[in-house]
Length: 347
Image (cartoon, rainbow, N blue to C red; front, side, top):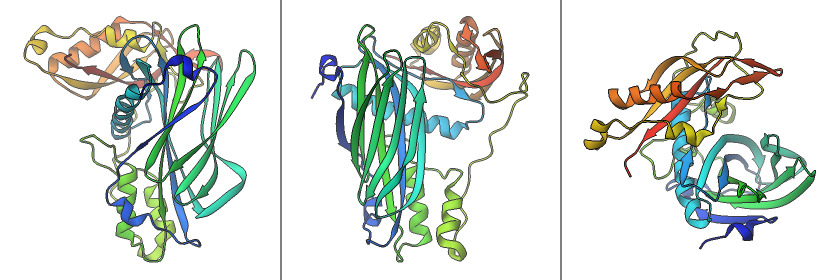
């Protein structure tokens, strides 16, 4: 099934595809009086009809390696799925986000539960949870064209352990649009659910399908365990804290993140694949933490995840060869640390 770009013009389409969770299905029954932990995972792409790639953003210093690798694996999974359904060729990962609420099993809210927000110079997006009746959640998707002040609204329904995608072609001249994937996990906290079963649910909601990455616990999981099971709570192994590097600007947060002047695809194109590595069939992903100063130059770097020595060197050379738009805080450029993923793949 292929949905053409013209078909998407000024309308929304939702596409459902099953996400297999395995043993989670054992836990998903619920009674009408049992609360449910409702987890909404959002993956947001800027999509274009030209090119053929999956491009990654720069990640903030405060995001750990485990989270980055999980976000990248999820993006790769959905890129594979959605590129088969839509006619888009180029996918730029904009963001990933997770929202978790403890709700009654049949709840329609007096106010919206925010799930995800995004805003740039052209577009603003709001995604909210408006109703949950196990095993289904209903979401409100609103997108506003900030140039002509037109707002469009669509309701998206997602079943437990499934995903839905919703999108809009907003820039016909440049053949661009936004595509958002909503993934729903929910577990009814019935009296017979044990802490061990709940821990398994937490691990599965953090897993990545079609990936070698195993589900790991994230910060916030222990809070749910302690709150829901109190004296019967069991400790969960947490990932190590994210190490912080000296920030010359004295600031970690920013209003606008840094970005390659010529776009993220230009960053990947700047990578010169070492001839020896190519001949020997060596591939891999390098994660670099770099300091981009207020002038948009990479002045320092640290290898967070190595592939091979020559691939590491090629990744470092690529980041130093291009110019970046610096991060902005209060309309002033600042220097910040960010993490850059660079892939070495043989076609």
